Structure formats: structure tokens, C-alpha cells
Image 1 (cartoon, rainbow, N blue to C red):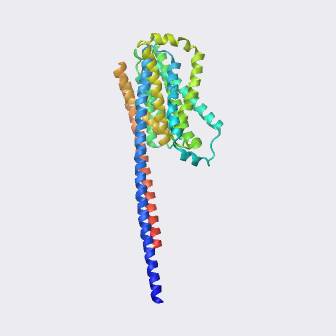
Image 2 (image 1 turned 120 degrees about the vertical axis):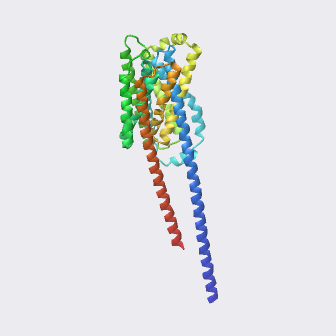
Image 3 (image 1 turned 30 degrees about the vertical axis):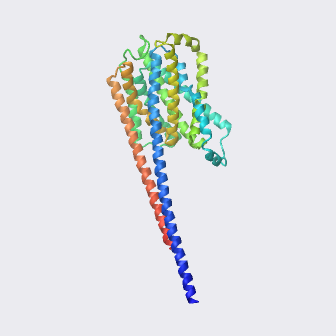
Length: 396
């Protein structure tokens, strides 16, 4: 009888030991699997961010330079230049249809959540569309009256505006480095007010100063409008849509572009500019085909730029997306000097340096935030490992 009890105790001890070993092995495998998954997800995310950032830089520079080319070679319609910034959205329909078959699991999981009403979506898209249309119109007027290099430097103030709007709309913290960035970008834009007006500044010969002032004010307000658009989009993604998928990005791009295009078309026909579109195409210095291709490629560049920008908002933040656009500050003026023979004055050079300094200041803040995030994750990982070890010691 005693021998039987000893054998049972021995067997139960071995079973407990085996269970403990299996538990430790499974825990180790789960930890390794989770770390590999986390590593892949991390680098996939940064690859996507890098790709979208490249799209934003290339397409923003190309679209801005093509807009300047339109004016340089005989184009005069600000409404048409606004229209190509939003009117290319139909090319996105095939991508949207392809994405419909994906993300079905997310859609099934989201059915249990209360989705916003149709009227909520409609009001959001109309608001974003009107804001986009107004900003595009202001930027088109600014580009008409300013050299493209000056235009791009003033447009860099969008980062400062976005920091302020994100502070109020998205609870973005204004740290010392972000405040420094805002101040530098503000000074960079103000300096351009005092730049000497040369023959390339504005289209009129007797009122260059007035033309430059109009261009400066319109570009500044256009930058503020775009900053408000990006900050509002980030808030809408977080509070209303919540599903941060490619399809949601496509929906926002298409519908806001649709309502912006409708508003711009109303302005085009109400202003009467549509009446001389045919004569403008015939008088275009590079020819009819070049006229059409300039508008088509401008529209495509703006749509790809918008997709990349909203993807950055979805994956990071509106402020980060604006930082990437600020990287075009040294790119566009240099290309404008090479392509359009624009003059690079001393004031422009100083303004460019200040804008880059402002970008680096914000970039350093992003670096500090990333370090803090990594430190927080490593602390959580250590705490989870301690918890697992305590669980194992309790079982033994």
C-alpha cells in the first residue's frame, strides 16, 4: 500500500514537472513569436512611412513646378490651376474597388461597433472638401503672383500653423523644440516680405509690389487652410472613422476631392473663365498637346501626393506629415533656379536656412519622442517577463 502511494506521488510529481517544462517552453516560444511579429510589424510600418514620405516629396515638387510651368507658358486661369489639384480623383476608383475585397475581417469585427450616420459622413466630407477647395484656390492665386521659389518658402509656414491647430484640435504638446520650430518658420516667412522685388516677382509691370503682396497673403492663408485641413483630418480619423485602413484613406481622398471639385467648378463657371479655355489652349506656348499633358500630370501628381499625405496622417500624425512637406523647402527653390532661371537672393537663402533649421528642430523632437516610446515599451516588456517568472515560480 505504501509503495503504491509512493509511486502515485512520484508520477504526480513527474506530471507537474513535465507541465512546468511544457509551460516554460510554450512561454518561450510565444515570447520569441511575439518579438518576431513585433519586429516585422515595426520595420514594415517604417518602410510604409518611408515610401509615403518619398511620394509626398516627389509629387509635391513635381505638382508645384508643373503649376508654375502652366503660368509661365501662357496659362492664366487660377480656377483651372485649382481644379487640377482636386479633379484627378476618378483615377483612384480602381484602387478603391481592389481594396473592397480586403480587410473583410476588420469590417466583420466593426459591425458590433456603432458606426457614424450617413449625415455625419456627408457633413465631414463637405467640410473637408470646401476647406480643400478654398485652400487650393488661395495657393493657385499665390503661385500666379509669386516666383515658385518664394511661394514654396512661404508655404513652409504650414508646419507652424499645423502645430498650433494640432495643439487645439488633437492635444498636441507644444514642447520647446516645436515652439522653436514655429518661431523659425514664422521668421522665415516674414523675411520674404522684405525681399527686393525683381522682374520675376509678379506678372504685372506697373504694380509688382501690389501683385507680390496679394501673392504673399494668399499663399499664407492657403498654407493655414491646408494646415487646418490636415489637423481636422487627423481628428476625424481618431474620433469618427476610427478604422485606419487604406480604404478609409481612399474614401476621404475621393469624397473630399469630389466636393472640392464641385465648388471649384461652380467658381469656374460663375467667373466666366470657362469661356476662354479654348483660346488659352490654342495660345499656349508649348502647344495644345503640352497644355493638356501639363494639366493631366499636375492632376495625377496632386492625387498621389494627397494619398501619401493622408497615409502619413493615418500612420503617424498630421504634424509629422507637415514636417515631410517642409522637406521640399530646399528642393523646390533649387529646382526653380535650374528650370525657370529664377534668382536666388540673399533674403531667400536666409529664409531657406531658417526653414530648414525649423524642420530640424521639430525632427529632433520626433527623435526624442521615439526614444521615449521605445523606453516605455522596454519597461512594459521587462514587467511582463517578471510577471511570467513569478507565475512559473508559483506553479513550482
